[in-house]
Image (cartoon, rainbow, N blue to C red; front, top):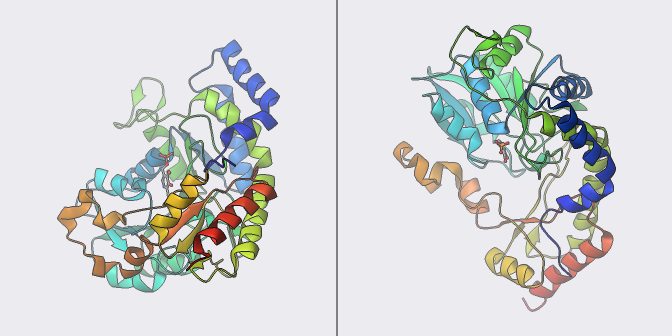
Length: 368
Ligand SMILES: Cc1ncc(COP(=O)(O)O)c(C=O)c1O
């Protein structure tokens, strides 16, 4: 059996007619830039999220960069973030001229909130927790720290669309939240796409201006901005998909429960833990496995694609050599990096496919 890591084609086939017609519609109207679908997607996404404002942008990386810039973060500032994430979370901090300060992770793969305060200095301006793999961090604790030290809170929700903490969507706890709709995300476009949500009107206006060359009105550039628009074609596709997000998240959740039941007796692996009071949306189902590399090779040879999120913690990347982090600064992330393995996870995964994955993992460890 061949099982891809993600299967975007299966989802397309299920919604082919609606997607094809949404794309056709944009082409007929030729409103490729700042089209009607962009405005409507912003309204619908904000409404679904229960947030006042949504600013659609070209991708999730620009969303973080624009957020930092419009919060006034720049040279000489420090921003605290997490050691295990995709580099967008930290490279955007560096791009503003500020310095990323990395904190280790906890057993749920999120920022370890007990280790944040020791990293706060007079230069610290903001914290960017990442709700990684689709699971909320201990966001109330992060918020409490931000309030106590007067720091901005930017939630990186690229992997956690509509995950909850205390029955409240992640992304609604901070000053603003950023999203990626990269194709493989739970809500994915057919190319790059992203968004920012906030309840702060002033910030929303600034962000809208910044991502549109610093102008709210054509040819009136109040500041130098960037060009980060959501493509109308992508907005039209996202509008077709948005109504299904809760159904898809629930299907992923059920698939994750199935894996967890079936894999629970294998002593060589640890299964993903769900943080109390949170609802995981399983963008990624990451186990921790003994002999991880050999297991990955064996699964690959058996037709099962897997991934590692992420093989090198951010502070240990060559890009951050100048910051002089060592493995001892982030012991948990450093240990997990050699153990984590993301199994295929998507709504269309069938029981047969999951049974095959489970059987192959059992087969690998049978002689241990
Ligand atoms: C945690 C996290 N933050 C930010 C991003 C950036 O999103 P994009 O690829 O849309 O720029 C990603 C994308 O993979 C991500 O996983």
